[in-house]
Image 1 (tube, rainbow, N blue to C red):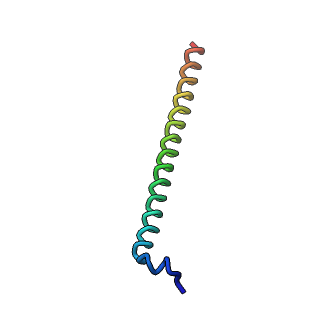
Image 2 (spheres, one colour):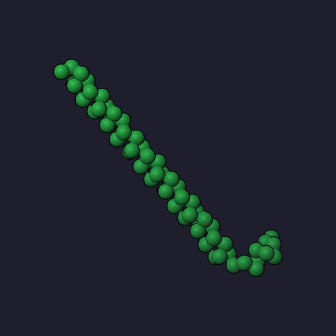
Image 3 (cartoon, rainbow, N blue to C red):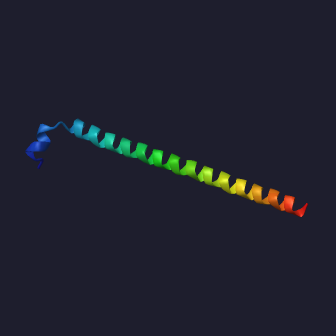
Length: 63
């Protein structure tokens, strides 16, 4: 059933390779997610600052 190349390489090594690949994928996705969340936080902060600034300028204009 298995080819000669598979029989030469131990199965645990192949499993470890698969696990390492999965772990690196998880790490990459975690980094991307943390980056996206960080950008989202910065964006919401910027929106709040703009809203506060517009409120302050409205108050100054009323006076």
